Length: 106
Image 1 (spheres, rainbow, N blue to C red):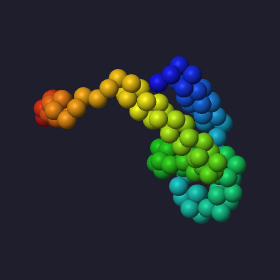
Image 2 (tube, rainbow, N blue to C red):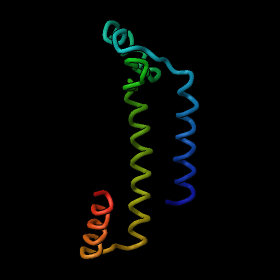
Image 3 (cartoon, rainbow, N blue to C red):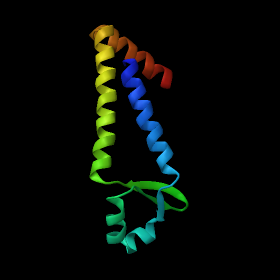
């Protein structure tokens, strides 16, 4: 991955993490009972949904979802580009590596 791409991914991740502390948290029962209200709020800011004091889901606007998806797509595109530059193992070497991984996990 290029240095610029890494910096972009890290900057966007940091931006997302800084935002989380000020975001709205709601328990699942309240979300169920007031879904319409939280659906409108979720269009403006992420809503963290909790059950048994654990965050289990996040309601996001479609714009935020698409922004995060674009970051992920960029990351994987860069990873594929770097892998392509390094070359390929080939079928025999790939199978050998997979067998080693499977044996190590057993």
